[in-house]
Image (cartoon, rainbow, N blue to C red; front, side, top):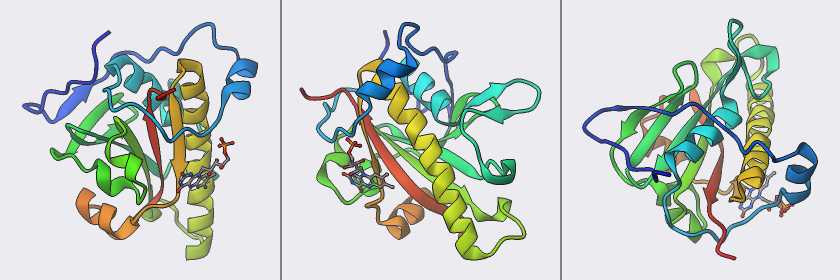
Length: 200
Ligand SMILES: Cc1cc2nc3c(=O)[nH]c(=O)nc-3n(C[C@H](O)[C@H](O)[C@H](O)COP(=O)(O)O)c2cc1C
């Protein structure tokens, strides 16, 4: 299976159709879900990246555009970024592709803990407050945080199914990372999540 080697000549990376391990039961993945911080630096296969992004917040209902994770009012305010050694990409769920944001290794900026700089994949969850109308600012933060948590649990379970290690992270210098990703002020980083093959 090919590891993630992205062609930086093109800004978009069309992902293969997502496929999760067929034999993983819900009970087994729930039993195996845990946080893992010690992961190998080895790149993940593109097929795995595809499945993880789809599990995170992909389209699971054609027609309605429904997602694998819920959101208040179905705002779908969260965008998943994949921060890889090759660069940082925005996951476009409708087209199931990665769109290049920065052709630089920004992994070390996705958190304040040392392991994030060498984890092969750091997901960053970004809420667009402009897509959450008619609610007070503190409600937006609360609801966006919960929505990111739902996405994160999908990733936890998908990682358990693949035998991958992952940890959700709130320890993020959001200002520095938002600046590096070029996010406008309405787009707020909620959480980040590292993924990789466990060391042991
Ligand atoms: C909202 C949230 C934020 C978290 N932030 C961090 C973090 O910044 N760094 C970290 O190493 N773990 C973080 N964790 C992981 C927790 O430490 C972990 O889930 C907890 O210790 C329980 O371990 P378990 O996930 O293996 O059951 C976070 C978990 C949640 C739900």
